[in-house]
Length: 257
Image 1 (cartoon, one colour):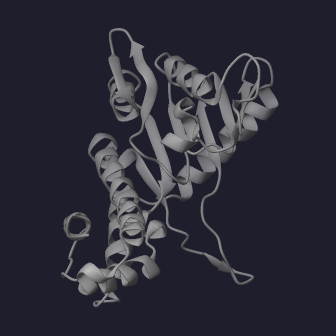
Image 2 (image 1 turned 90 degrees about the horizontal axis):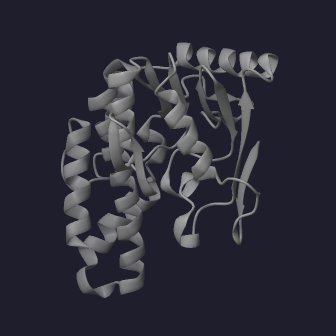
């Protein structure tokens, strides 16, 4: 089964990307494990409530993940460390805009504010996942990222339980998953059932397990993120010593803009 979204919305018959993700999460409540692998993850809201009685009834995907942890136990999420989301050119521009006060076009100011909000939302989503998943939240740090002059990081989007796998282009984010409002990215997801294609399913499970084994924990991600920012002491207007400090700084910058 394949679900795709294009310019006009859902362009495949039968089900949408959001439908596939919802079915995957519903079936995961009866699974022995759930692995979510996506470069970008946010605490997005479904277009309609996700109800799996008696475990969860919510729009928010993080509530669903929390319920899965209570029911299933082995729920692992692999994503990129948020150091990969930092745009140094944007942070440098922010400090200049803040210092120029009223001399900056409101459109430019609004664009910068939206970019900062996206970064802040991404960090907050990871912090919320950390509180829910603890050691089962894992990160690609791109430790061996320089080869042939390229920076290599996690790009796979793979969702797998003990019944089937979803593989495609859709990140575990609002623009990747949710079909409403007509502004979601153009994406495709393919469903591979274990009982119909054991070889392909087993291959994907091996890939997922290999990724998870090579991943790192939150503390390594945090240290890397803070270390990178502290190398550029003039990039942020206030000193930072931890991820929560970065959250505070971003909130202040957004308010000042």
